Image (tube, rainbow, N blue to C red; front, top):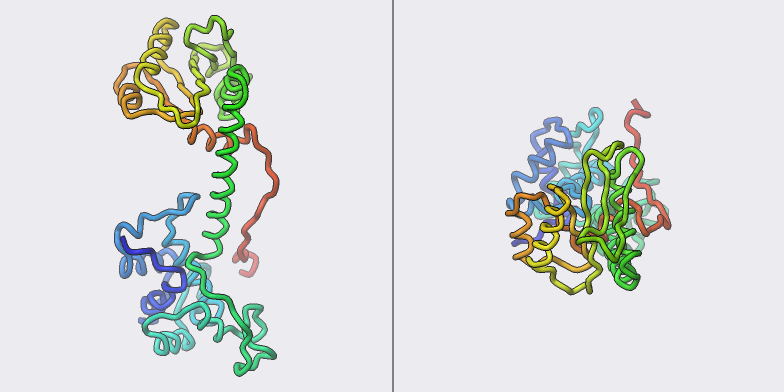
Length: 301
């Protein structure tokens, strides 16, 4: 599969789309450029947040072209090519890099690369990154989350079974289960009957979710027999739904059985468990918050 173009590789396609002089919304620009340049596989690539990578990169291309005067904004989110944009399209028909675009920055712009605004004295600039600033932030956060997830699973496995079972119940309550009062009960380890916890889904306890939490080695594959045993325990409680959570992973036979059995059984492996703990703030704390800002168009209207 061909690599998705970097954000600066979208600039000429953006200008080429605008060459007819029409005013276009950012949404139509993204659609038009994607239709003209991308394969289906490239269009479905997403950021860690789930938004399309191509939308993000085309948006940055539009933003930087507007910054150097290649595009003008007619109204909020509406763009049209300028004489500067036409010159860029004529001068760089095969593509323009970030380094080249910087030479066209407006005087006074902090992006300006020349000393005292003299084109003959450029200052060094860094090479063009393949990903745009938003992607760099999101991928950095994703790497941090991956490291934290691995540490969470290691810590959970290192603790005793009672700690793990309580941590699982704390997570389910944080996710909104447990009714209005957040009611979750951990069963006695010596006589749990295959059920490690019970979650009330409503204030009266009329609907319950039964939980089995298994603190297995991280590379252990849970098979069909364990899931069958859990389903049997659910039947013993006249229950029709349960959650099996492990620090390990589930083999294909286990997943196939859980999907085919009449009793509703949700399987949560170690990877998903750690992701949910991070998402709902269980066992983690926020060290630093990062805000990504943009100009408020309403303020200037």
